Amino acid sequence: MMQVDVRKATMDDRAALQLIGRQTFYETFARHNTEADMNKYLEGTFNERQVVSELDNSDCLFFMAWEGSSVIGYLKLSIGEAQTELREEAGLEIERIYVLKPYHGLGVGQLLYEKAIDVARSLQKTYVWLGVWEENARAIRFYEKNGFVAFDNHTFLVGDDEQTDIMMKKILDAGT
Image (tube, rainbow, N blue to C red; front, side, top):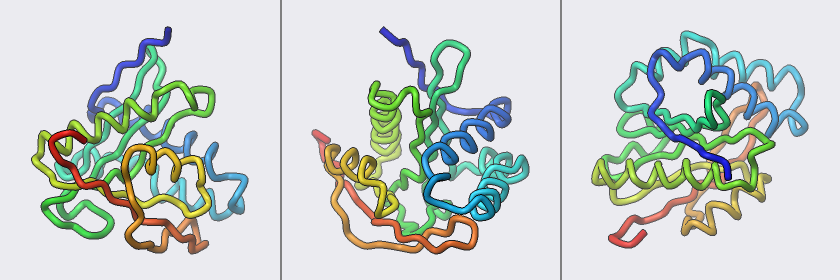
């Protein structure tokens, strides 16, 4: 059985975070986007300055999934003004859950999701929300299985390509 350790990322993890971020986004979306759009998104989102800025922002929380000494996935949470939308004190945004392809279906995404819910509870948030690409059926099913419901949509830019994300929300109560 695979042993996965999920721990909070620190500034010392910035290079590994950049690498896992680029690799997992590319694996997930390259076939749906032009090379130019992918490169623009990856460079803008995962350059060292951006990653350092986010790691240094107390409203951005990163957690990394490790199997031994290898990073196999990560989670980005945003609260307060770091949220891409809503920005309500009661909410926490799951901005990213990404896992390397060889680890899909092995429960790593679920572990990262459960970490997000634990953090939301510890911060006394009343709901968790996220945006998921409307054509990412696998991710939509994952979130629906975990109790999320669609409530709106928004535009997400990959390079210069405007794509539509479904915004989904889960209300937290004592048992969820």
